[in-house]
Image (tube, rainbow, N blue to C red):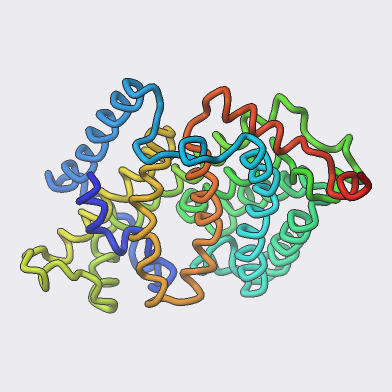
Length: 337
């Protein structure tokens, strides 16, 4: 599995950010080709095997986590205390950029007329609310409402590709903005209950995993012509140069297979730390080619992947550390001690 993933340098280069997506509708007829079903069935079979191994290993990653590398419970608590702020920054920057560019959540979701102004105001407002940690849960709800409105304004397919937005909305609804926030210092009654904290990371994981799965289909497995045209403009299929005679269409199917497998593992939480490490290189190799658009668009995924790497699994010890970190006193209270 690691070898296959290592072949995927364009696994998360979003073709629709750089091509006219409207010119490439989904190709339902691709389902008539055995190669498509192989590209879909292969990762599902590997995922099923991974789930079995995950359970047999007692939900332990192969790559060691902080606790096996000398990290103490106190330091893990401290890291978790900063996580909501870090995720707010990673999500807030794309919201700001898309708002200023009159796009919704991604560069290909162009907005016009009154919707451009409303969504610009909404995205920048959510960015500020999350950054300061003021009425965080209200802004998390606004984020989800914008996603829902986007279904009618820009379409179902683009919003399903951006379903990670719902994952972030659920995260901040369940976890708030943590101790380093205005809410903790001034509006503690507006914060979520400790019971909701346990749902924050799993719901974020589901949103990110579903986004990767949807994109695997809409930009690759069921849209091979678009991906092939993308490779014609940006020749990233390096395998023929290595003596592996893979056509661009076959390369696209392989990349879609990889992205689908990564999405399934993130969705289920199986070998989460391992899949994040394996996917990190292909996730970043195209940054030097596509520049700021790629970097800004992927920032939410970078933040989530960093959290997932530290998280590993939802075992009782980890969940207890998460609660202790998020429920730490506010920064103002700490400074008064």
